Length: 449
Image (cartoon, rainbow, N blue to C red; front, side):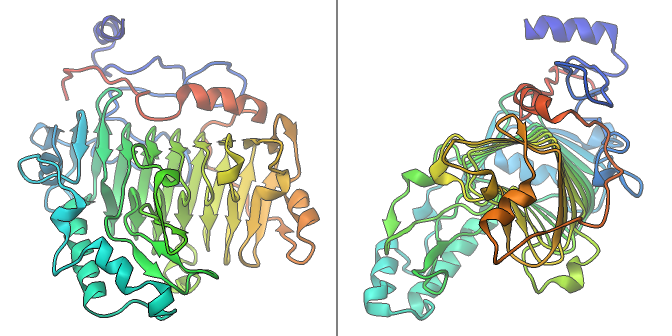
């Protein structure tokens, strides 16, 4: 059926290409309507007014790429070659099937033992830094050095640096980056769409005995990190721990052996980012916007991010946690099915200015509306027309009722203007369930680019 529909649409609209059913929607009230799209997904640009990434000239990615700079890749090695040398030449990279970042040049899978060097073993590390014998000092010495060297080897393999003026787009509904750490670092004008990011894991977590009251395991490697970059559109992707859920991992020194970090981080002076119609699922530390209270020199006045029409399903926290940025969070659905994993949704951090409007929270009875917000630092937040289990709730009042010694202030001091589509809060769960995530753009193949 899909191929017949694609063929029919291609005949009718060969100029603009083949995509999923198009219904242009710029306001609420069109039941069942898809997010507006026009043309082939690989050539599409961010629509006007669609969040912060539409400011100051907008985001076009690799839409201007000539035929010589359009690539279809089937392996991690091919993808690393396709991103090029960072010269800014517009390019389109189409991802087909599963690309395993933990694989060698021949495509053979690599395990953690393949990265280990200088005598590192997990058993040796656990024995060396057991708090019962090592104490509470930070790990140091030959085995910690070996852990760092081993981690560096994995990082060299799984990290992908995306250049300016690039679009990376998945083909169909099966494009998957497995174990990848995709970095958009110090560049402008990037689009990432229609990909499943699964299980970005760290083989060599570090034990930090000073993290919290009892210590913690800390890992590196976000699935996608926007670092010091501008004009980035992250659209119709799925982020998941997939085959390696946290609750299936062992505990060492009494703490979860945490091998995952963030799913999407926006840090170090990054600016003008829109994340739309994504699924973030089954993960703890989900989205961090601004990674340090001490980064005001680079982050103040930047970190302007829009999050809209995303599904957050059984995410633990940071959806998002914000420092410094003016962050527009609207029309998202937060679906919590497992109360045990939920900590909070919106983290109010240093000098942040979150504008949270028309979001819907579906929570178990044991999770109160007062747990949606969390105050990390003194900063105001605007929260309007948000629903919890189908009814409008004042999220700030709900939080303050349970935290009389750490009251949140209302009014973030600004109002968003860059919104291409706004749906009524009650309609958000239905729209997001139908249209968010990878596999919705439905590009026909083969296709002339």
